[in-house]
Image (cartoon, rainbow, N blue to C red; front, side, top):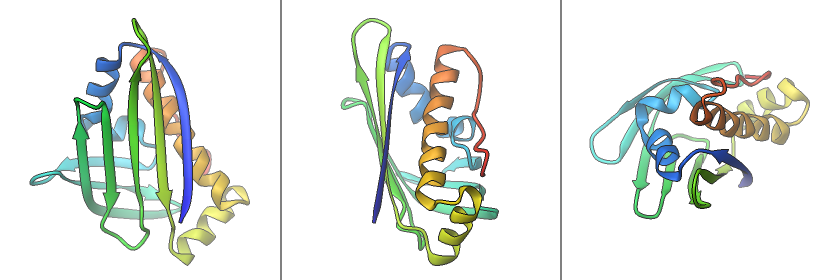
Length: 151
């Protein structure tokens, strides 16, 4: 299992950041490969999009603990994809966002990721960084979604 993480400082109140990132309808606004996200029963979500040149339609879990300012998610699929996001209140209008992914793509997807940037890990890390930068842009009102060059 490969692990990826990215941290950013956002000039916005922690509760505003948490409210934005934890709203399922906002997922397509900041996740590079997601084009549609729909809440399901309980703590379930369905996401659609395109990654590594392949369209996907995936179900998974999506848990938000607002008291801890923490989210967790994961797919039901073959890629063993799950992660967490934490919003840390730095006081005032400064917030730290930390996102962590655990991901083991299947061999075919591994190959597509390698073809995109020459390195699977670099492709995945770039996507993670773009997601966090998109959150920062949108929460600070300084732009929108950052598309991956290799998406």
